[in-house]
Image (cartoon, rainbow, N blue to C red):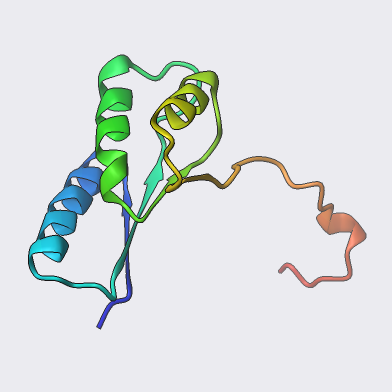
Length: 103
């Protein structure tokens, strides 16, 4: 059995939305539904952002890879507590200074 369904990108968002409806109808309470949103930052067109905003409510956790002013405004305006940020970026960890065997 599965305890988490994790969705990415547009197809995953639509699948997650459909699964959310099935989960509600079937009263499936043990499975958590998570989406990772890649529609954040500069150069994102309006249609994908709006679709992600509208469907974000159907997920137990909706993860953003970064935070921008539009998402910050949306989260504050809609009071969405299910939206979290897991920052994507450069780590201060320097592999060459470590004693780890990375080969």
